[in-house]
Image (cartoon, rainbow, N blue to C red; front, side, top):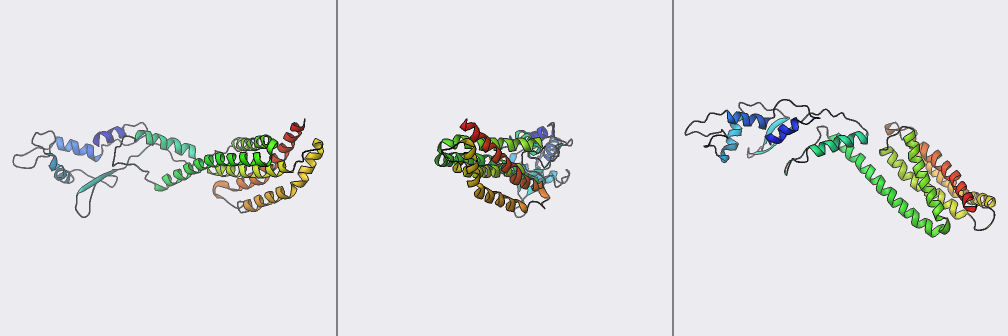
Length: 287
């Protein structure tokens, strides 16, 4: 333990110059003067016995200072040594952004991967770990939701749109890619907020595209087919847009995480891109 703690103090992102209690205990033990017929606490002395370790630790506590962030832990009932706790300050700066937190946690995970069984580490501020776990789960869930959503969209498009399904799938992919490009161009960091947006984008783009594609007649010139499809899909698309407005209305007054941006994306970006892009793709298909 002392050797590992010494190595942790030498990491390039840690900031703890003074030795920890296990290191100081070993130094104290080596300087301990053993007296015949009395317990010997010098680990370098041939008369030292392992079963005296607990006794020697108790003796050392009267000479070695301990504190809440560098101290052995004793059982309140049996008074046996059950563990040890230490606080290791670092030079890492906290950030609410997932990218920065992820880099910090990856660095910590790599540095403390050799702690062994029965030992673990955690942040002093527990909410930091909770926040990071939330961000990580949101990103992971967003990725899984996108894959599942695209799979379901592809299957339904093949059943309902048949030959038009490739156009619909390309449209939906373009919408998602365009949305990611928009949020990146606006300077947003792909995180919790954008993960929610991307999941909603897939559902909304599929909703608009499916209604539009299913309304396109099989015969007629390109212009009349587009006009007829627009009229037939006007009601379901309008209802979908209205539901998006109602769902996003509560986000207009939100301050945390700027959820009003979700409202902006739901109401304007997806609806406009879907309508215009779909028409262009249908015209290109007719040509």
